[in-house]
Amino acid sequence: MPYHQPRTFEEYCEELETVLPIIEAEAETSEQLCYLSDRTVATLQDAGLYRMLLPRELAGAELTHLEAMKIIERLAWAHGSTGWCAMVNNSLATAMALYAPGDAVGEIFAENPDVMVAGNGIPRGFARPVDGGYMIRGNWAYGSGIQHAEWVHSGCIVLRDEKISKLPNGQTEILIAHHPRDSVELRGNWDVLGLRATGSFDYGLKDAEELFVPEGMCYRSDSVVPCRGGIQGSLGLVGIAAWAHSSWALGVGRRMLDELVLYAREKADVFGKVCDAPTFRFQFAQAEAKFRSARSFLVESWQSIADGLAAGQPATVRQITSAKLGMRHIHDVVSEVGTFAYRTARGTSLHDGLMQRVYRDIHSGTQHIHLADQVVQECGRDLLGLVGPTAKWVAFNIVD
Image (tube, rainbow, N blue to C red):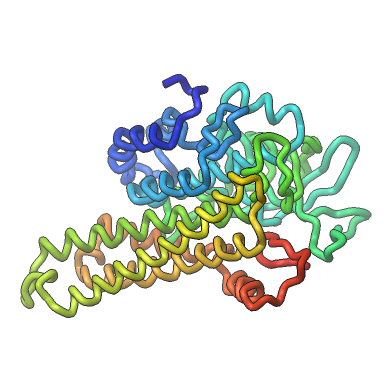
């Protein structure tokens, strides 16, 4: 299928039958490199898996978030780091296409819709307004997938008159700036427990203290009015991030339980076959119930959002609350059942191998700032009816 031809959800599912074996075959090479192998990246690009959420007018598939969630789930099942990079690129490239207003953005995606975007929107930099754009500076971390990126997405605190700019709601003004990959240098700092193949390196500007970024290549981090595409773009970065991390957690959680089944049915020790132990059977059934229940909560939350968007209604504060709560809950459950699987498998999971890798990936994904307790506290505030009628979600909290 030509690279510019948008795929349907069903076509993506068919494509995965070819893609997943390649991802699994390349996983160890990627782990050793500490970033995805060239073959893995090319496979994802050729299959259109970096543009599942991209607007159709830019040759994207514009799948519903629930459909795209099921695809990322399977990619993460095959290899946690590959699934992670796929959800990151889908998130950042889609946000760039939706919210950056410049004509150049449309031209970039028209030339090649499989644009690779990486970086970090958490504001570790600063931006000062100048004629036609912003001068940015900073040092950023966790640039997942940046090894192969063409464009970099960097979060910056806006400075006006050398002071931190505040919005009318009291929140700090945060800008997302997009600049070419060759404008930055990678600074390593990715010797970590898991998700090693994501290449989530630190990065900073190369050969300059500041970089000019045109206004058309920037957008405010709380943007929810898309410049391109339909109402699906009204979700904003806050919703896209919840989609991304939830999708990934589903895949690694399912893989750990699937590997535990194989271990339990095949392995025996001095106490006999693992699967013959009544206690294990009971605990495994509980683990399955917890995982499936958490997954069902996510599916319910995202189906509600999809139904609303299809009817022309942007997601409500309560719908985003459910999505964010579901995101944190699935990570808590995956951490719990992953630890159960790791403990049960004893020496098999202790040594270098698939179960150990998935366990490490799970307990690296749980460390993300989007899963902070403070975010769940905000979910509780909404569920208790303690937010006002004009409330809206921003990155980590609800503002009235």
